[in-house]
Length: 304
Image (cartoon, rainbow, N blue to C red; front, side, top):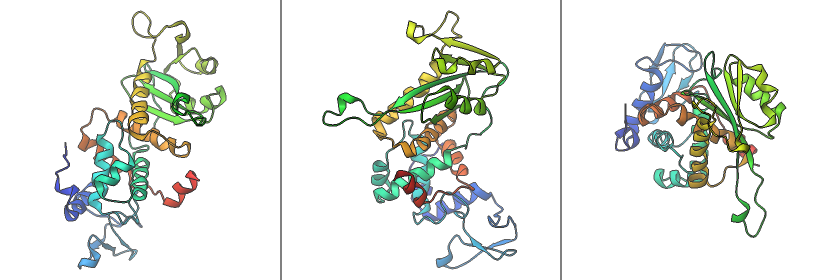
């Protein structure tokens, strides 16, 4: 399934509503409050898209109980925003979304963060790796360069850890500090211990590596990047970071520490769905928004 931006679902509210309902319920709407299938569509222009549950007597729409709940942004603009963020390999800035959707910057910024929340976990939360699998662990630092800030000190760089299964999925995290204690908690809860762990020579991985089926080290300080035979390397993680940093440098320019985890989820999602079409990726992100809420107050409190 591939979709282009001339599709009526991105310009017509009735088509967008039909698409969103089919995505969520198929042909059988259910009440998000009690789960009942005994529901009926209400009539009248003022109640377009509204259903009434015959059991709990609550009203609801396709937005209820989803990331779009209580949003005044039209559904066709929501679907276009989902498509744009899913289809843009290096992301799309809130300023660009503002211009393309004809909304305020504040609305575009909040819209993008809610879509990132929908993307989080949409490709699964199970442990990476397993028997005969190799998982690479590596870290990078996100932030400005001192030479680009002539008149004031640059903000401290923020560390990001990536766990990448070869020929599989990635999971990245913003970490407060790159320490053995901090990284161990993330790695052992996200990587199957039957996996072969691949890291660089950083001492934070030395003891941790013993907890896995195998542990190989690439000595970058000795200019070793891949061994003969091609097994020992962390190039898969480096590839993910190259895409991530292109997004930082070319699209977002700055990622606040408070929201860095959501940007990680966005890049994880696109990497994990790299074999899908843009339409399939956007559809999966839309499904990922079911059962989630993100209020502006919550995001604003994080930014404060």
